[in-house]
Amino acid sequence: MPLAAPDVLAELEALRALTAQLQAELYAKNLYIEKLKAQLASLKRARFGRSSEKLDHLIEQLELAIADLEESEAHTNIERTAARPIASSPSAVATAKSSLGRKPLPAHLPCETIVHEPDCTCPNCGGSVFSTIGTDEREVLEYVPSHFKRVVHLRPKLSCRTCETIVQAPMPSLPIERGRPGPNLLAHVLVSKYCDHLPLHRQSDIYAREGVDLDRSTLAGWVGAMAALLQILSDRIGTHARAGEMVHADDTPIPVLDPGRGQTKTGRLWTVVRDERSWGSAVPPAAFYAYSPDRKGERAQHLLSPCRGFLHADAYAGFDKLYVGHPLTGDTRLIQVACWAHARRDLYNEFLRNRSPSAERALDLISDLFAVETGINGLDPETRLAARLARSVPLLEILKSHLDTTLARISGKSELAKAIRYMTSRWKALTVYATDGRLEMSNNAAERAIRPLALGRKNYLFSGSDASGDRAAVIYTIVETCKMNGINPQAYLADVIERIADHPANRVDELLPWNWTPRS
Image 1 (spheres, one colour):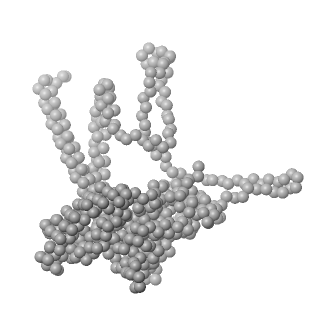
Image 2 (cartoon, rainbow, N blue to C red):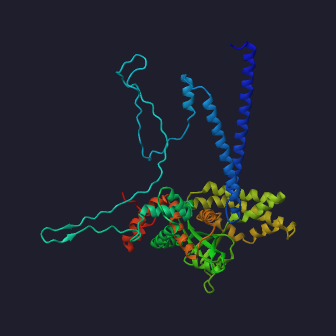
Image 3 (spheres, helix red, strand yellow):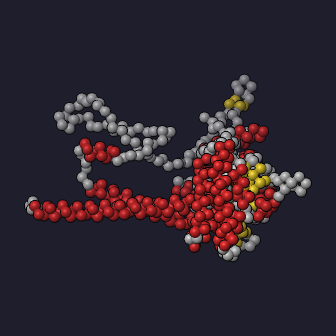
């Protein structure tokens, strides 16, 4: 029985109200997602240094919340699409096509073409002769899971019919003699542990799902063997990293098992970074890591003993002896370049606590200094220096005057006074960057190199021993240097592990990431 006109109008009004309500809810959700994304971006910008590691949990929670909201939105869209009648009009089809404003898929991916042939009989007249008028094409991105395979090496033995001499091709050298893992599998284990932060026991569980029994102790033996094999490459990267005139250094704590006491102790992983790309240098970037069982100053001094020039670092007292002049000549091995990201941190925290106008003014001036750096990143040293002399030096003078004036009128015991004294007591080291276009305003290069270690520490919980820390330093050196040079660590390690045993020792530099040429 057809509906009366008033009933139709009432139903239409109800549908309009429901549509308006759904649109309002969708708009509110989109606004909330954008708000969370803005908060996430703000947290990530502040995510530098040891103290910022406390932000990791909050960042993860925000990412989970955003993902959950976006999943809910996608779920709702699918339900609406399923409930909506299939569009058949040309305008509806055009609208659907125009909504797929996606980036094209990468051209380097292997391509599989599937042709869907229509029925050979016309549904209208029953005819069987057709002519092609066009082809609709749609690309789909698919994933083929990685898989294991057996590689059987066969070496036929041949006997000479004349003299009965037996000839046989030599067995190719394997990364682990009498071992079963191939170079690609070894590279995968290393990258999974040190690049993707998957502990060995988790890897063992993953491989078991593929029907391959590789217990944790077996994988650990492989990692130890590869660290020994690749040690020479790590050492060469360390030589290159510490040969630069401008280096960055930092360290991070690593919990290490201490069996004698039945608990963990705190070791340190140090990094020395050489990255000259910010001033247009073609010298390959590198990150060298070293482990120590403690944080004594002598560890830092030994690590940086080959370095000469400028050191970007925080205010760790262990570096101080490196800045002291020679008792006879007065020459210093290293000139300290202090980090403005560290210097502003206490000031920023004080501003969040009390909303101090003096702290806000200082933070605004520091932000202006960073804005200058953003505009000159990647330019040649002469251009960078000229911009700093013209724009940064006047800002530094204003900032110094503001800090001195503020310090004179506030309590010397206040947190704001402590934050200001941190900067004024290191003013020379903080401003030396403005005298050389090759220097950086912050130590962010080292902070970036430390960040993967913090992620790994979160998953591993602790290292098994000091030797484990040494092995981690070797593999981190290679993996992170590959990433800095735009090289896939998996492809690099697989190729190098296969070649290095037979590679001449006097030509090992050919295998360094920036010199590496993959075999075709």
